[in-house]
Length: 262
Ligand SMILES: Nc1ncnc2c1ncn2[C@@H]1O[C@H](COP(=O)(O)OP(=O)(O)OP(=O)(O)O)[C@@H](O)[C@H]1O
Ligand SMILES: [Mg+2]
Image 1: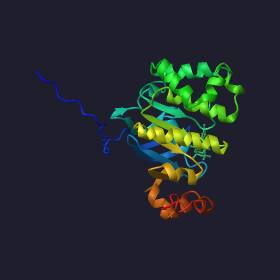
Image 2: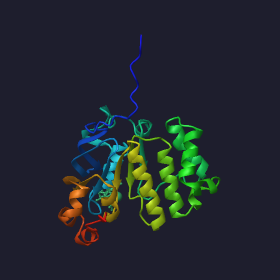
Image 3: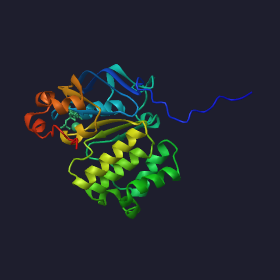
Image 4: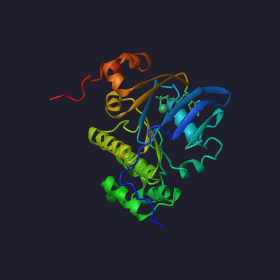
């Protein structure tokens, strides 16, 4: 019997929602932080989460990782519930996380931190090599303890460790905080590269100009509530939602015509 031909192109189904956060409530002790928070991300999509300090952006990412439990609502990855899993199972499902302030295993070397990432989803030498090619500085610092790396090098390591999972969803919490322009553009290139590999990225970022040039959609949060949503394209032309939820000075930083026609 003749087998069916293998299609030579990758079919991208935009309707697919790889990650779905639906109406979650989260608390620290008795204090409710997230109130019916919802968002979704599709393969190959860069979703940006914006809001003022304390709006609940980090808490949203932590709840996806199972680090803050959701007391109501659900979190699913391809229809599998994540919110009912223990936190250590979430990365194994292919969710990479680069926390705010790039928490690493400080006492461990670059090599050991990378190894932790590889072991999570049983990835091997090929993935390690790809990471060291992507971030050559890490190869130079391979035996150095993470706590002795520079801020930029630590961010590279935090990214590399998350990417060692070969994630389907990547959560980045202010990845460019305190970094010089060349590092910011490296991170940006990595995120854009992941988009091409159909990874869904959720990006929390303060630098609105950097966000709008790579994001597909923006979700605005205020006081733990999802308030609004817009495409990055629409926000470039009309930043009024940014004024409202983030502040006027940020909206003023937007270049309305980032891609000059000719
Ligand atoms: N471990 C904690 N215990 C108690 N309250 C907390 C804890 N972590 C965060 N909060 C509170 O939850 C709220 C949301 O914090 P979160 O870190 O999610 O905000 P954010 O939007 O990420 O802010 P930022 O832009 O400053 O990073 C804040 O009021 C914060 O004080
Ligand atoms: Mg935060």
